[in-house]
Image (cartoon, rainbow, N blue to C red):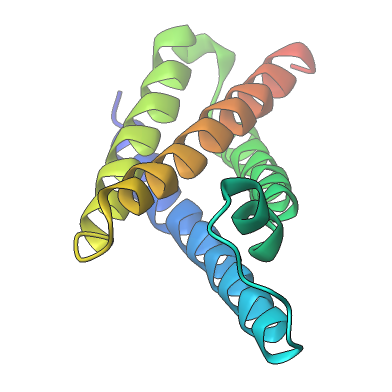
Length: 138
């Protein structure tokens, strides 16, 4: 259980930094498209395209997978049991989503929920897959 007190804060900080770097990338992409004269629409599918959301979410998931695989390989042992892996995954996801929600307090509620959702879903999937990969190859 003591190892969780080490890897959870590391996981939260690193995955939030990864997420914020991809969010910054998305904002830059939108700015470039606006400068190039692209038409801005309020349609949700157009917003996905303007921010390159699908690619950024995919790259975020891959980055979290690789980071979580490193965490699982270095700090985690299958002897700890499934509960340790699940605690890492869900605590880092929950706390990270709350932090993102708080960072976006001045934004629209939809933006708050959407950012927390994009972080949470990709994080749960990628971290779970990383711990599963570690378990299979151990």
